[in-house]
Length: 431
Image (tube, rainbow, N blue to C red; front, side):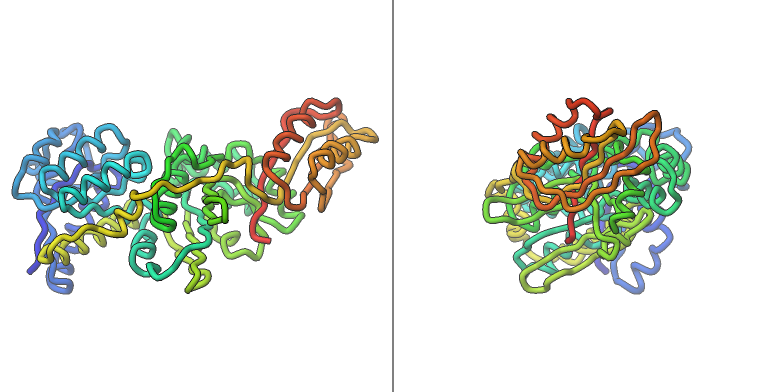
């Protein structure tokens, strides 16, 4: 029987779910799959803390280095999160000759170059299926199932918190704050949800998708990142009137002069397949030159789906143990050359623009003149007669325009008489 001796770093929500999965399905793995997974040691910050799982005290330690130094361990599973301690411990584990499995997208997005290179130099497996899409086999699809393809684009919903909030705002006509409170009450949002709401979590995941879809280094700072905190219920409603739904998308597109890589709230036609991904579910839509469109869909977060992905990586290591380690060519392809990521100001897109304007003649004409001067043409307009304090919403959709021109025009419009507050701008995809 194949066997792996495992050291587990972290026993939070994901770590507890992973520990429980291996404990509950131990007999299944041994009898049906022929692999024995033994968690030999578990490192935690506080040994006396009450936990959701029952675990023998003799395998707990508050010294992570005990796992690194234990020569009997085959694999370190890193589930502590963050980057400072994780970077140090993962590097130490690889140097000590241990394979590593991690769910840490922030670590690999920010320090992937050095960690992938170290793993290959030390001839150890570094696997991270759980870092993108929870239980959805996204990384495996890129590395194996779709390896014959050159990719044209990736459109993805890869943050369950934001997708749940936007789905609630759409279905129940609730406002952003109430939808966030509901997400927190159901455990779909952290007490401090800023990494999710600001789009940073999705940007970490997109950085990994770009690496393995397009083959090269990508700096996290080059990925444009915009969250959902400025989305209002009126934006959801107006989008519906035009036939769209609002989703937080992580997008990567290959163009002749570089790769677009951006996270942003986006209007999608109601009949678009991603517009109908709701709740905390995730989905990744690949477009390859051989397979065309290929969709992966499922639960993208949570303890059980993530634990499932971790076990899939452990299974890969168990099956590879008796084979000679050769350089992981696909992983090295992801760091051999820098990718050219286009600046957001150079992209071409359609736009949704929302203004709050004084209800008087000539305001729309003035906005149209400014947009026209910046070579932006209007395709659709909604102007509501109902006003609050003589202020009415004005919504415009544009034809294709350059981001730079849109930004310059909005700066000018926002300073105009008759405009109250800052304009809202959202990009439109899928037409």
